[in-house]
Image (tube, rainbow, N blue to C red; front, side, top):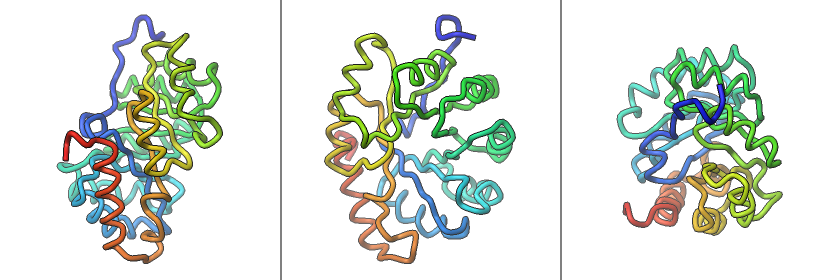
Length: 218
């Protein structure tokens, strides 16, 4: 399967509209509910739950039942076929991996689930895109600047990119202005909320990111 012959899946509608994916790495999956409740109420349309959080897949059906009509809920840090299959079976709206593995991309595409694989070099990013990625994750984005989007678009004019890693609110604005399809953010938005921090402050940061990333939707 190549980029010339496949019918490419795209990132989910709410993710594309809000241009923002919030990566939630929590101490335990039972911490997700209170965080997602605040984020989604504040207008966040896409949340990536990571497999580095114990119990994520077991908790996912409950979270989809509670929040799935209001936001796209994806599963990230997928690094092998077994994890990919389990995340799909649990109902993930989309998948994210920090690596470039075309076999994972192909498996997700065949299952009808959009995948955003990570890479940094043009070779890695194009290989993932050619394999059928819905978008490619520039990771770690803090090692390059937003001008990297223009550099990639020279040889790969249609590639959809999502920077991840150290993206703060100003960085989000800069990357989106450069042409990123969306931005992936974690710590700069979540702060200490996953460790029991102030949820009111989390709500304020979420509102600020939503307004900065997709001002026309607010």
